[in-house]
Length: 422
Ligand code: AMP
Ligand code: GLY
Image 1 (spheres, helix red, strand yellow):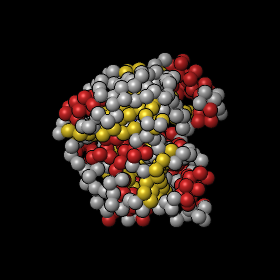
Image 2 (tube, helix red, strand yellow):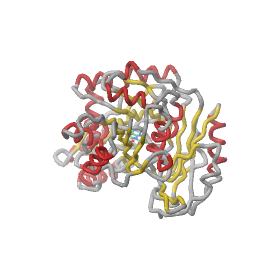
Image 3 (cartoon, rainbow, N blue to C red):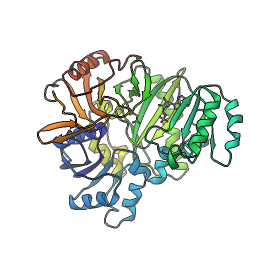
């Protein structure tokens, strides 16, 4: 089989790395990929958002399956684009169609879905310019801090957590007036849930599903979970509090009702579902759905999948996932994300990276890198995910940090406390 993976981050490198180990996979193409995927397959230089380029690449390279890494092409309807095109209709796309991807693409849709199917989530109300006058009254029903979310995709910047009620009102109005463009045509205001977060993943063919390993990611730039939000500064798997009792609750209160809800609503979902959960006093609540795998979570969960991931993907494509097996490794896997100086604010690209061949104990998943002649240079805020395994989380982290210290580039920054809270 020839496969095309869309995306360019650590998630896509981890997918490429895993799928390259499958006996069933012949050639892997990655669009646009990075300097890490280059060693495992063929990078194609176009953006996944350009569906016509995707089509041409699929036909030219005789692609049998397309795997979509990031959310934007899914929310924009790449799956539907394939279904509507005679030349592409028989090529499976791993990732939901536009209607199903609304679970991530519209927070209002996701909240309505959660409430309709009685899945635990924070109390909320949705506003637009027609009912914005009711915002102060609704905020009075909540206690601070207030969680304000732009309805649509806002490049990870669309969630604000605000202590002051007047500021919460002002920000709601600012979002409705275009602060995040059309992503803010609606705003979801919700109750703040206090607890520790957990990322849970399934792969589904629309009828059955397999549970993948869970992970915890570290979103803030600073030590002790302080400072600005980032795409993710590191991750660990497994997660100590996600024991059997907790995961049973996740299955019966969240995953199974989500699968049943999709079926009841007539939504056929093929791909990965990422449940962004929060553990409130031992009970899981859904904070968000994502229509894809997480990043940097992929960098720790994929190395724990012992079985052939392509076999599961083929199960999604053929609709016989229930007949496939998944085997998970009990080992601990950790990843430490090396980022560019200045990230998540402004930063410079093109910094030469040294030490890539020294990190023999860790897997290096490239996140934002490019090859420039004989050298590898930075090309994004998140640059490299230093991923390690161990018998304990501590051992895995020690290896990640020992190897992170061997990498050098101008402005290198990373968190030294991944896993600190577990
Ligand atoms: P999201 O983009 O929906 O993942 O939200 C970004 C972050 O905001 C989450 O990872 C949480 O840390 C936080 N968050 C979102 N919703 C809530 C909530 N209802 N209560 C507490 N924290 C939240
Ligand atoms: N690490 C969170 C995400 O991928 O959205």
